[in-house]
Each structure stands twice: as structure tokens, then as C-alpha cells.
Length: 266
Image 1 (cartoon, rainbow, N blue to C red):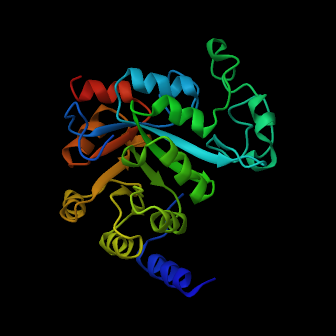
Image 2: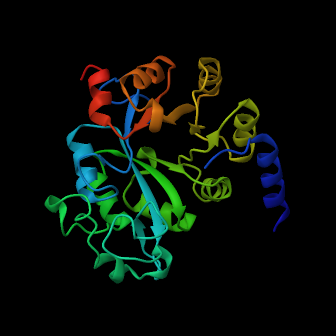
Image 3: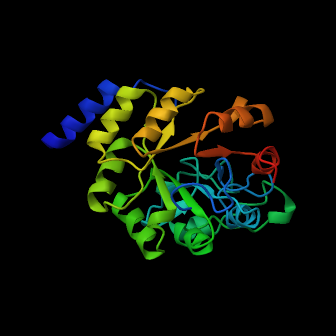
């Protein structure tokens, strides 16, 4: 491992507590916070599929969260788990299957008969659907940074994408493409400052599990950085949504964008 890589990892792990597991600024609708649909609108369509993305666009949301993995033959596809078992009629690791093998699977029948025959999308297909219509919150599960950067550049989505993933891949992406909007996860002030120094000034940070303080959010904003938080689980309800909005967060990731829209009065 090169010296700069060792330095980066030592600095980050000293600063970061071990945890479990559309454009810049507010949306065009001037919502109190932007809305991120977790794996698409997954309550009404199968997750990480084109129909789930299309629903997010139709609801006029701000971002879709996408989980990106790479097939055996090098194609990027949308899949949260490392296997296809949970959301298709097939079995096996994404890394061990070719693109043709994955495309032969049914990614919708498990959800409802209405979506029978839905395919696992290539990332490029998702970007083609989203380009100029909604932002991409990319959870980089298993893909080469240079391949993801190329796909984002090809679809002119540098300003409308944020990249979540492991720190080293984010570091590599920022070095390759200074305009990429990386989104490291931070849990405290030390972690924030470490990421600012070693990840070349991130545009956005993802807040760790648990409820952040308004003071910490204010500190993030004081550096010109946006604060996004996933409110999945116990906070993904009207009361939790309202509390998160009141804290001044810039974007909220939810499994229930329809309810969040109601909380925001839309």
C-alpha cells in the first residue's frame, strides 16, 4: 500500500467511530429539505428497478438512491444485496453472474404480479431515465470508481449526483474527477474535519445513524457542506420526519416519500 493510502486510512480511522453497518442547494420546489427515495419508491414498485425510479420522477422527488454492483463480465447493475436471491427468481452472487444471466431474471414478480417480468437495470439505463429529471444518490457497493465516473460524465450528471461509499473509493474518485460530489459519512466533528482534509473538501456529508444535533448540522453548514440523513427505521414516520426537518437537514432519505410530502404540505 502506498504511503498516501496508509496516511489516509490512519487519519480517518482515528477520527471516525466504528458504526454499524438535483442540483446543489434546495430543490426547485423550495422544500424545507430535499427528498431521497430509498431504492426508488420501493413501497409501490420493486426496489432498484426502472418502475421504482419512474415513480420517484412522477412524484417530483429530488433524488433516487441506487445501489450499484458489478457483474462477472464488468457491467454495473442495480442491486442492494451481494446476491440476487432476495429480489429476483434467481440465486447467486452478482459478482459471479454475467450481465446476460442477471438480465434473464425476473426482478418484479416477488413484489407483485403487476411487475412480473421487470428486469434488473443496468446503471446506464437508470441514468438514461433519470438524466435531467431527478438526482442520483449512488451507494457504491461494488464497482470501480473510474467506471462510475465515466457513466456519470456520459450522462452529464456530475452536478446532480452524490456518491456514498467507502472512504478510499471516494478519495480516488475525487482525485480522478474534482467535480464529483462525494458524500462521506460522518459521526462527529473530528470525522468531519478529517474528511474535509483528506477527501478534498466533500460537497455533501451523510450523517451517521442516530439523531444528529442542530449544533453539528450548523457546523457542517458553516463549511459550505450539505447534510443528508437517512431516516429509515424508527424515524421514518411523520413525527420523525418533522423532527428531522426542524434540525435543518438538507435532504432526507426515506422509504415513505408519499408521507414525507404530506408532512411538507405538498
